[in-house]
Image 1 (cartoon, rainbow, N blue to C red):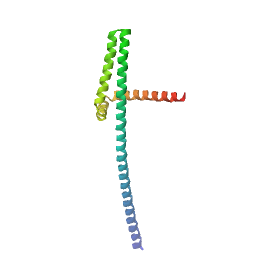
Image 2 (image 1 turned 45 degrees about the horizontal axis):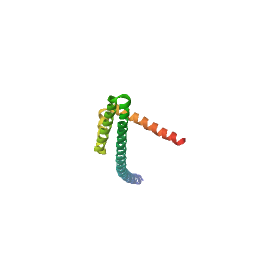
Image 3 (image 1 turned 90 degrees about the vertical axis):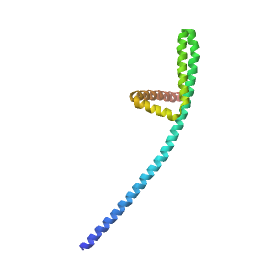
Image 4 (image 1 turned 90 degrees about the horizontal axis):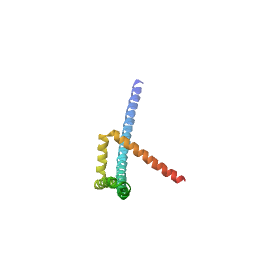
Length: 151
């Protein structure tokens, strides 16, 4: 009877080992599936982000060009009301904005992203402050758009 009990325990151990191997195999398959999906969707997300960044860059350049033109137009009025010296300040500001827009046009999105990363590495406190200010501004814009739709 002792031999039978020993055989039963041995058979149980081999069955447990087989079950453990099957579970490990399924776990490995699940891990591989997760890796495949994450790399697939990660690549799609990266492509989408780059597309959005390109669109944002184009809009920013357009907005900066419009701002530069607006400041240039206002410089004439500043000349008339405050004097040529202050009009020159306005024209200088317009030129600075225009130059910045041209720099943005000349760089691809990857260069801009790398410059942003470098800026954050060098000045993390300033980067957090800028991010907070931008977040606040976006929240205000969204809120004003929501309030405008209710009216």
